[in-house]
Image 1 (cartoon, rainbow, N blue to C red):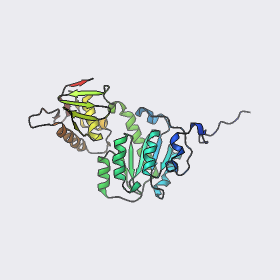
Image 2 (cartoon, helix red, strand yellow):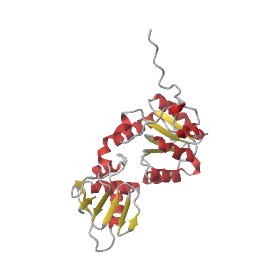
Image 3 (cartoon, helix red, strand yellow):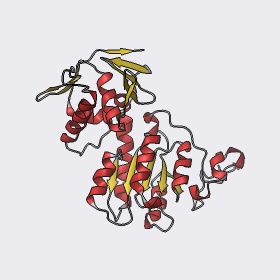
Image 4 (cartoon, rainbow, N blue to C red):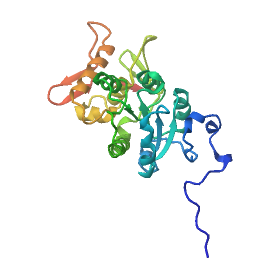
Length: 282
């Protein structure tokens, strides 16, 4: 008689345990079994493996009750109850982060720091209903979605899978330019560090502006519709097309160095936008 295979959720060998688990009591406060994380190198990996969800919420938050249902829905959930634990667990390459806006007392500041450190998909939520301004600011800071309280587990699962599916589908659109440094007009862009400069002067780009600029430089002299740009930047599909118009306007202003400067981004009425500058990669 054959011996039954061990259950997938059995305790793993300590030798294979990530080093961060040894000192991260807050990183798995509920003692859920862990599996050694495999790095996600491309967004196409997000739906071919069991999604790894990093759930960052206060210890006493009722949001913690969402963890077990997510695991039953086929996701691997790792929890942390502190800002330090959140950033420590980023090294485990989560597929998506669910961030409690009340974590650490200032979830929006945490979101800002998290988005500066990683492009991991982020869903914001809170145990208590927040002001509408929090949702707007959160999305502008780079969150992929926002769920108001009370949070329905089925809706949360659906939104997680939708975000990961969209990331998978748009992997080619959001891929960085194949070369590290790109020049256009008087500008130089380091695609790895997101550093845009002109004659040594650095211009700060938000993550959304960088993704938008990247979409333009990988397709210069081509007409890109608003939907093309929504896809390339990973912005939520249910947002108005005018959100892209606002992003283009902000980027255009940063590229406009003077009243006589040539316009890099042209508006084609009824069609979309075109990046007119010649792009040179090195």
